[in-house]
View 1 (cartoon, chains in turn purple, brown):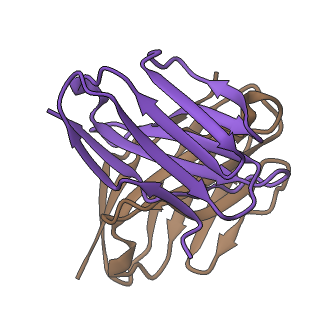
View 2 (tube, helix red, strand yellow; view 1 turned 60 degrees about the horizontal axis):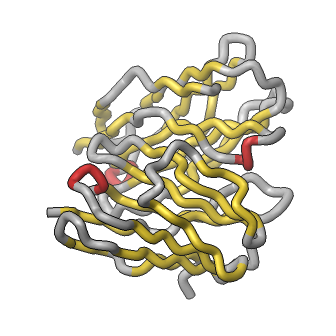
View 3 (tube, one colour; view 1 turned 180 degrees about the vertical axis):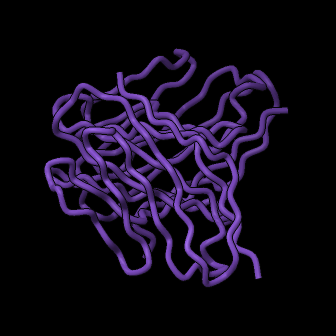
Length: 112
Length: 116
């Protein structure tokens, strides 16, 4: 059983399209995150939800919109995709009171 | 804001040797966690070791150990008896414990290659 699963693992799309990446965790964790890893492998936080409530919203273009229908799911929708959005997007989760993350395997988004 | 610096973009080590990866950080927080994550070519982010700032004892996990110098804001990772499977990108990360949503602030990474 995969603890944090992301779909799709790979996504190739054209500029201007709208796409979504889904994340699900079966660990019972309360907090979920989206991180972006750019072409130089630098990782940066984008968003975090705690029990469906948005708690972190870093400086991210408003074309990016996270949605958490329940505490086990955190999806990322991206409108009007640009070349610069090409990256690997990681979902992660963390239980309340503990500080270790469990990461998903990442989604490689390529915008052409 | 916190910053994490990894000054070694690439390192190589012979199999069975020992290697140390450097990490320094800047923060005004007194209570925080530090982590080392490994990212092999499979892309998976794997937790290697973590250190709680209020603990003076350095963390160890099998062949992996840290040298945590709180006053110097230094957190280096030592890998003993290096194995081919240790080849990966290694990221140092900082987490403050009050406010901030427990986000991780990452360094730029060190690509480690273990050679025969």
